[in-house]
Length: 414
Image (tube, rainbow, N blue to C red; front, top):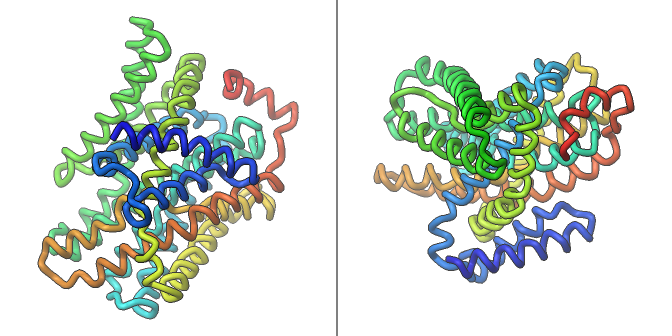
């Protein structure tokens, strides 16, 4: 495994540099590297490395969500509160519902199977979106209206809602679901429980850090370790109490930024350095999950269904922004920021297939769901990343001097 890690670090950095020189997001190079080295093309990754893929990808996702939390200042969230809430569920539900409705017309799936596919696809990728939004925040682009903050916060919550709805649908399919009302009520409960736990844990950590004053590096490792334990807690509480661990991870960073900016900036800076390594692991391993042959098998039918889903998602974004102060170009930026899919689709795409195998039923629908999930990564991760970069550079205004005064504290250590 050590050899594969060394390969991915060196070649990942090279791929990132080459794609940036081509004025394209570096993550595209790392995704392509993962595809080529993965088991479905040249098979050059060691088996042990691939076996640890899920854990490594989860750690990378935790790091990026921690960074998101440490960038979510209360002042910025106040500007975009309503829009951030609407963006966290309206676009995803519209996309998932559109695929559920249209799936049987495009593919050999029932409406329930199409709904499972829809809410796998509906999860936007924070691993693609959050680093790009942090880049805009550092450059104060769109900061006057809090646009990157709005997208970053909503995109992270979007994942939680999509995963919970998918879990409910999978329960219906396998016959293990509880009542619709109970499962539906679990969505807001899991989010509120995650927020509450994250705020409490962040406050406790802050008090411990103030009492014992460990170095910034040790603080960062403690925060990361506690965040991993939160994810483990979510797994232990499955079927007992709904708990959104990824929301708790973000809330931990948020409360520390709110109560002690200087300490939060130090930890965020260390996390930024960890992200260099974590991003290589995340995007190369996501790429390694992509079976191009599966995506090819769904052909134009799968592509057409994905385009319909993205159209519904884009309409949901525009609907969520009705009455907001954003101009036409800024609304376009928010819309394309919701296109990229990657992490959740790589992690969840095969879940229905495995459930069908365990239940001893026909696995053909599971193969179709996995193929379309793979196609969504191939199509939207590069397209979305490029669109975010191009549109953002053209439409996001750099905060003026009056706006900068309110942001100095956030940007001071960047």
